[in-house]
Length: 554
Image (cartoon, rainbow, N blue to C red; front, side, top):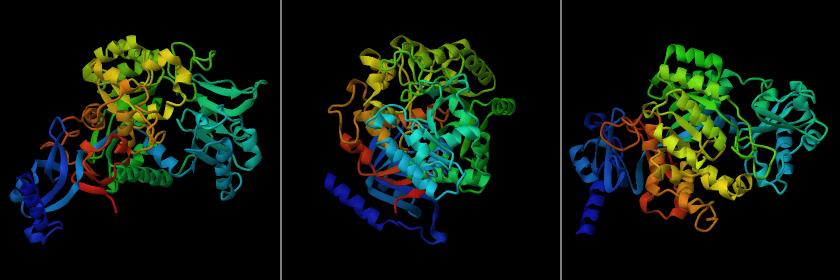
């Protein structure tokens, strides 16, 4: 009987229109059909179901045969060997940062400083002398020599261009002597608050700048034109859609990027939805706290949150720790914002209906954020967030949960950092690191993302990391601290339902139900039964935003 039903279903699909029929015979909307649909508030896998979307909204969900019978003239997109997911959301990424990374020297996966220099030199050969060379993606932890590089070798290879190349996490950068000269940086230059200029034994800058110190050089780099910024934003958005994401939370947008996004929306060229966090800039915050939130501009842009930075990053030893780094005993990291500043912004934001989402990686950074939110009177209804939460003291987890603070975490950070994280933190402190299961079991809520371009934008890399805690070769066997793994259902929820909650969008997004927006991610195969080892290989067939296919595999 079961085989007969399956054969009947396939026969009905064969008779169904897969192309839009003549206009006089069509019914508005699109019926999306797949072998598996994650349906309803619990995202229950349903076999051979369909999702009928009209005017950008899901109208009906149910067995494909029933929906085709009810809507015989509707346009049908049938993909039987596929799974329809609620539109995936990356809860922490950088829109312009991704666009910039697509346009500058790509240094991700370089295995030595020599390889970094070679790529920079290649770009310089095709760039007029005197123009800046910008790059991103190097990570000294991937090299045989795991110390920060110095500028001398870069100077010798590229003497005629100022060079500024960011580390993969964006929290440190290397500059050559031409860049230091352009910025006026010398041995007499003092470390700014929240930043560190790495120096040699004589006090001279080595070329590496950590956190706030990067501005000493970065602020003299010529700003891109409006046209260049717009092109980079569009390239990033198209890349995001091609990876199966229907929305991203932009963790620190500036005025120029807001303008570019709004222009693209007005021109009907913007494919995804963006939930934007305003960067911590005095003028920007004054403007927006005065005029109030912007919700669902053109159906694609919401601005109702603020991004703060409590500390730096673990890889560059700028994350603020309660005790010194295990591999750098004289260093406990950097606080990028004073607790009183975070409390002040949180208080003002609450009074104007804005959410605050604060970058905090080290356990001291996390504690200062919780203290600041508490001092501002934050409650669960405010839905304030801690971004990253890579290390937390066990005593702070109940406080995180009691204030309803959302843990916005990035699973691929764990699998990228696992080769060296325990050296940074030691055998005891590592137990409170990348602790997704601990936070979830304590009653916390996880909104999951990637932090692109720090990590790859592909959400299935994050889902795989969350479920296995292994690299793509399956190492280490059994997973790294496997007690912190998530189930596949929990990982998908973090990229859908709980990401929507973290943006106050749970009534319109995050699940496949009538009345929700028609945002869908369609992947090849039966995702719920896919072997865990293959999750990172999941192939996106189509990305649907408001019922419109904004990406389709060719």
